[in-house]
View (cartoon, rainbow, N blue to C red):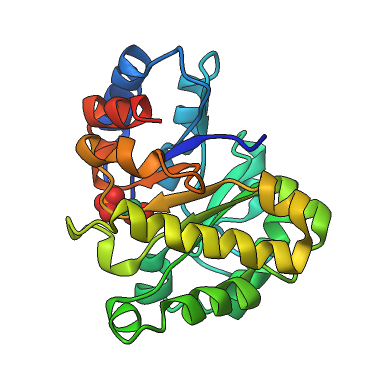
Length: 250
Ligand code: PEP
């Protein structure tokens, strides 16, 4: 059976003290009776303290990005080995903000995926169409191409370490949410696409998260759809009460 997952992407928010405060609140407020994997992704400089802080909890820690090279002259970048060395074994790759503002292409993401998997990291691979693609009816093609070019080159056994996050760009940070029907329709398509390429076992086992303005008041309905296995949460992950309520909706 596939795992239910709720992950919080904190983006470029929260300094060291605020990170600690939010983690403490989460430890207090997150429901403990749910079968769910919970992950938070603070900014790079606060990852080591988050790992320490969460050591005896059921909350995992992910990085929001990493570089594809093992090491080298890449000023300002962070390697897989550096993340692993502080106890971070999960990384978000392909977030739409990385694709849009930092020009990360499918080919670049494919090589980041390879590096992360080589280091036995879990990858949360994000993808999703822009508004113009949905308006022109091209959203299924776009998503299939992102999967083909960014992650479908991996070996079948690597899927144990892959979580997918479908995040329609038009719904990220906009307050616009895909309806639960739109989310289900796309998640079903994604699972079917995986089934065609990798077979039923992989398709049935992979967790596919929805991301895009998930809030306490819409989480339950979206998570209730059969092919939605949880969420990647941006804005609402920054408030412990909201994030806890979203986890409660699983
Ligand atoms: C995200 O950044 O991955 C995201 C889903 O953001 P928000 O929940 O704020 O739309």
